[in-house]
Image (tube, rainbow, N blue to C red):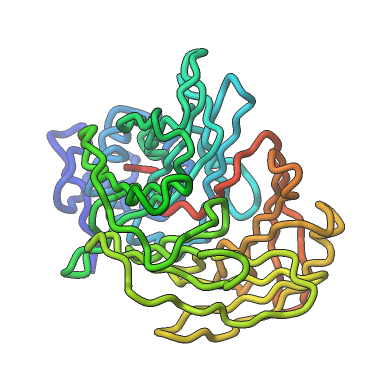
Length: 375
């Protein structure tokens, strides 16, 4: 069955969108053939192809084409969002699995000091805007369009930490993006706050406090997967609190950590292929456990000795994605030098790590980007 293709208007073969048609254009390929060829081209060069001519620009900016292209390329290797900032300038880079920059998005006028990517949007925490200091100012960036939205200020809550994710509606579809904030200093007098990102500035509203006091707020202590926030309570009990972004309620129970092993360097939470995983990093190795229902299933043990030699023995390693060729994409950084991070791949067939690229002046919060760059 042929794909939905463009219509050809008049005798000049111009693409106008709509259903498939064939044009005789004196030696030029029929437009429906061009349409099918362009559908097979990756998004990165297609963005440049918009400058070829007006008809190609019309096609490659058409939402219908973008949706069909995304469906056709849903099995492509993942992309990763990384934030780079030097104190005066900031940008979001979208990287492919070979470490090449697919797209750069300027975050001006803000120079971010922290980024929280989730699916197709990125939340930036900004301390400096046009030379002024604004503690914990928040912006949301859409890397596909480059649009930047400023969220309501929480200057008086300078110690707040934030969780960013998209809810899942009761019908199973995509819900709204939300920001959940914590203030460890206010416990137990002030509840959490939550904000819905709906295109307007909105207002922060009260959210219930979790069933246990959460003491950890930095990178790797929480993750959002399928509309649910999983937040590590502390490093002593190693229990996990669960928050439903759609219902805006905490589950009344805590999930236990899968296993404690000797010589632990770091424990963390991550999302891998839309699943929550618990990561235990020890000397030379990293264990990955996947949450299946109410229990944990051990997935694999990775030899990360080469990464630890590169960054140091205290390296924080986060799994990002398991690719079709069973390689695991990993992000690594030295917690004492978080401005430098590197992308690695681990080949489970021969148990070797390969360094892909090192990014300087980066900000902790690297994640898989699932947005449509043609949108």
